[in-house]
Structure formats: structure tokens, C-alpha cells
Image (cartoon, rainbow over all chains, first blue to last red; front, side, top):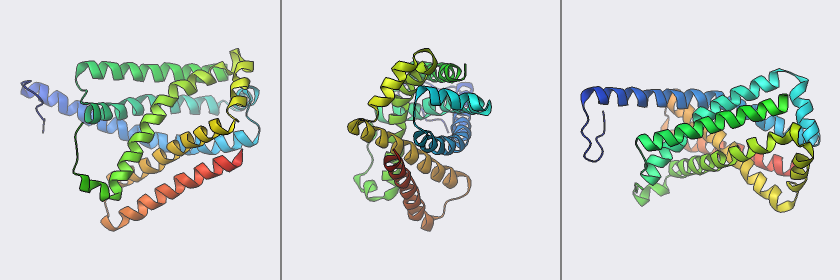
Length: 128
Length: 116
């Protein structure tokens, strides 16, 4: 059911679009969460191993070069985070700050792009 | 802000919600910094190594441990949520699931703190 907020009239087509968008957000948030659950377990384990081996710029770069699976893994990690974090922030902006609507969605889209670009740039910097 | 009945806060599920939300905000704020610092590994390795040396100071190590706790808590709480949504709700399992999630997150943070 579409919840009408304020005085904005909601027509049936717009309502159906909003419902579809909400369903997609739900699916994307849970699918990215499932991917992240695996990624974070691997990340937490590798943090312990990395600290034991002595954490340095050279050690981080060497680890990323040791196996091409590492950059691929971190690229998947970044994509999942870039989907998951803005959707989580969207719920918080709505429920705690009362921020919703097009401007909020555009701002959160920019957050997604920032995380995606920044994360992939970091992975490329380490693997390059 | 939507205000809920204060009696809800006597429920352990409300605290799980708050931990999940606050840890999520902390992680979202940390990520851009994390990416920026890591992107300097090849271009400015000395600067990254100076930064890594700084993270061994006790105060910074404590903040880092809290950050790791936030990640572990968000993971454990998130897995619990996925379980509730896709496997099923069992009222008499909820407190145990919360306790396991909290214990796993705290155990990992302790391992991290004592490891370095």
C-alpha cells in the first residue's frame, strides 16, 4: 500500500512505480547484505592475518599482488557496499531526519557513486 | 524524527536496531576515509606508513577497535536480520540470536585489540 505523505496527490501509475521502486530497494538491500556477509567475514579474518604479518604500505600492496583473486574480491566488496550503504542511509534520512523525496534520492545516488568510484580507485591503486 | 513508545526500549530488539543503525552510520562515515588512505599505498607509501604508525598510538588503537566492533556488530546483527527475514521468526529464539550476535562481535573486537 502506498502511504500518502503531506498533500501530494498520488495517481495510480505513480503509486505502482513507487511500489516497484520500494520492492527493488528491498531486494537490492538484502542481496547486497548477503554478499557483504561473506565479504566482511573474509575481511575480518584478513585484518587479523595482515596485522600479524606487520601492517605496512608494502605489505598491503604485496598481498594484493600475490593473487589476482584479491583485487577481484575487493572490487565485488566495493560494489556491494556502494549499493548497501546509501540504501541504509536512505532509511535513516527518512525515519530520523524526515528527509525524503527527489533531492534526498539524488544526494544518496551521489553517495553511491562516491563510494563506488572511491572504492574502485583504492582497489586499482593497490593492485596497479 | 518518529518517536516510538518508550516501553519499546525495554525490548532487546530495540537495542539491536539501535546498534545496527549507529554502527551503520559510523561505517558509512569511515569508508571514504578508508578508501582515501588506502589509495595512497602505491603513490605515497611513506605517507601511508606514517599514517599506519600513528594508528598504533593507544588512543587511535582504541578508536580503531571500536570501529572494528562496529563492523563486527553490523555483520552479526545483519546476519541475524537476514535469518529472521528469510529463514523464519521463532519468538523463543530471538534473545538467544541477539546474545550470540553480541558475543560474536565482542569476541572479535577483543581478538583484534589483543592481536596487535
